[in-house]
Each structure stands twice: as structure tokens, then as C-alpha cells.
Length: 265
Image: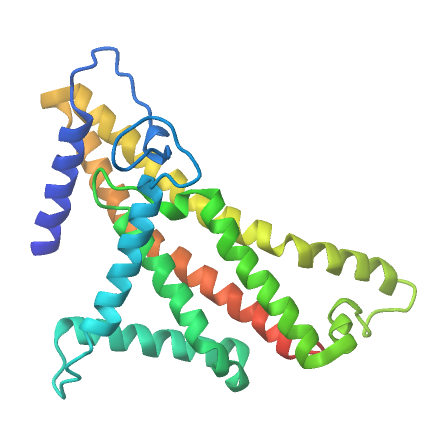
């Protein structure tokens, strides 16, 4: 009941933000992704603090609050915050071990930090009037390139030239191996593209649909029952999508890490 009331309150707040002032039903679902100066002004320069920077910083603070402040007491009977932190730690730790192997646990801190940042930015982006950094392709490209470059460098450091064996399918017929090698190399360099677009695209699409339904609800006034129900359903789905996209991003990072550690597998 508490969760339902919370969701309903958020829905009503979103509808209030959208408003009913525009009789032409002018809905601009993409306006919520526009970068703007956070402290006034219209122009963005190199050192302008934007709304994206503010919400990235808030996501970092939220991660610190969860993992540092929330676990500071380390009680035998954990609080809710400590329980969430411990469950997140165990969840990602098991993921890394199951997907990439025990030798990949040396890189668990980076993967865990990546997971927490992505999931926290996704969740914070569900707050009405907030900004979602992971809906910006620039942010997701940086995250994806960091993973891609790190695992590529690690692959050569750990395996030397034999890392190139990742692209040579020795089990295939000899005549097909050069063709498959080209396909493997192409798919390898497409990884950061697919990784970044998947995250940004899913987050952006969900938020845009949510804004459209909220606009319908605001325009219909007293007859907005169906749009409100749609907003509630989509909001619940977006909560799930926010976690799933962070999970997928982290799992694929573990898969790429496994390829770097064990290119012959």
C-alpha cells in the first residue's frame, strides 16, 4: 500500500508539472533531456555547471551515502540501508564470479562502482523534474569506452599477442577463418557502440513515453483516468528497466572482462 501511494503521489506530481495550461496539447517529451546551466543563464561554456553535472554529482553522493554512511555502523542486525548495501555487494560479487571467473574478482571494485553509478543515476532520473545523465549518449559513451579500453589493454597485458586469438576461430574450417576473423574484429569494435546506445536508448525511450502520458493526463483534466493508470504502469516498468539496464551493462562488462582474461575460451 505504501509503495502504491508513493507511486500515485509521484504520478500526480508529474501531472501537476506538465499542467493543463496549453489547450493545443503541446507535449515536448524530449525537452527533459536538454542540457541547461544549473545556476541560471542560457549559454553553456567549457566550465558551465549544467543540470547533467549536478545530477551526476548527486548520484555519486547517493552511492557514497549508501556504501559509506549506510554501512559505517556494521551492525550485526543491519539497518535497511546496510541491508541494501550488503545485498548489492553480494549480488555484483556473485555476478562477477559466475560470469567472468574467480580471477576476475581482482577487478570487482571497478565493476561494482560502475553498477552502483549506473543504477543510481537511473533511479534518480525517475524523480519528477530531475535529469537523467544516462539518457545522454555522451555519458554512456564515456562509460562504454572506459570499459572497452580497459579490457582491451588488460587483454594485451595479461596475454600479449595471444590476445588476438580471440578473433581467430580455430574450430572453424580453414577457408572460413579469415572471414570469421573480420566479423569478430568488427563485432569487437562495435561493443562500445552497442553498450552505450542500449543504455541511453532504453532510458530515453521510457522517460519520453512517461512524459507523453503525463501530458495527456494533464490535458484531459477530469477525464484523465486512463492516462493516469498508464503513467502508473509505465512508471513501475521504468523502475524495473532502470535496474535491468544497469544489470545488463554490468553483465556485458563481465563478459568482456572474461574475454580479456581468457581469450582462448
